[in-house]
Length: 276
Image (cartoon, rainbow, N blue to C red; front, side, top):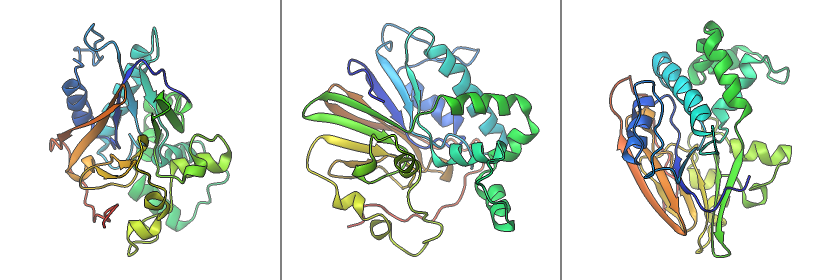
């Protein structure tokens, strides 16, 4: 999906129920939030659009995941009332939660998959016991896209996906390409393999140009960049930062807010990307 080139874009990494940090980051980018939880459009920010890079659910507490779903849902409707200002990219967690709550026949239920459901996809239980949230999540899922692309000119563009897929899949709409842009090879199944060996195509395909590929999915201690490949999942739910990249014209800038300790943080053993 091509994005209008005249807008400024605030692209936010994996939220995972960190609603307080999401609000703080948006306020830092010039949005105020009214008592009803709506982001306010002003002459100062009306040119700005928001993109969530996927994985806004799971890992956080049920209370914070509930707040996250409700906040995103009401603001998706509010900000897009007159023109599109809020975009959602599908992450692997939205994909798996959707498959569980819709009883996807291709999802094989085994003792291991049930354990994974409880461990990695805790939003499922919340949605199963809360019909209101179940409805809101399905409505959000239906408006997600797998990729977006911003083109300023022939020398500067940015492609956004949740996962760091190979270039041959970027901006394609085949079934295989969509899967690759949502999730790459599992780290949990290859815990001892360095990321740079597990997904070598990311650094092998990196180029010294300004046609960027920005993604999340791979929780890191900080923003990781190698040439035109940039990961902005900075592990908010693990007690680090929630980060964003701002695209304005043909310029990139970065910002972040720290974890606010308003819910229990998770634990994470970091497997660093671009560790060379």
